[in-house]
Length: 141
Image (cartoon, rainbow, N blue to C red; front, side, top):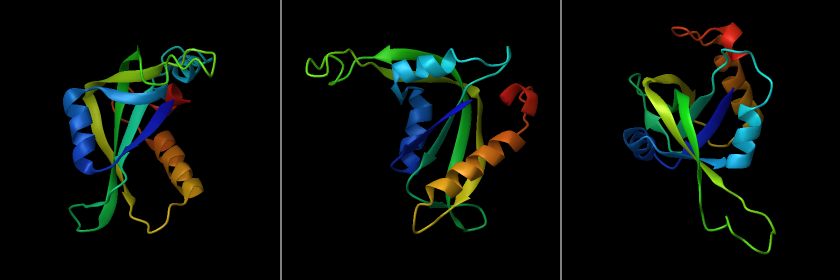
């Protein structure tokens, strides 16, 4: 299982890894995903990419995609947490990653338009084909 996050620029992605503190959306949704039925050794990953393109070694304009295993997810208070108009408490999530497992996964080619379906398909196919160390297709499915 994985969570995909985008940041404004490659430098911001680097800072997120440096400080190892990444906002990851709704804590309720994260808990639901974490507690959903899965195989015993199945892991959760954070996929992070910049919205701004950069040049790779081949001088192609790409969005570098990084992946790391999620170590800990903690609830976080924010401005909307105690919104009395909504009538419920909404916590956000802060995630710490296992940085020793962080890797540059693949380069997503730059597009002048965003094709969400194509991006999701590329992520899903690459995620299923990925095989590093103890992570295998059986553990990810």
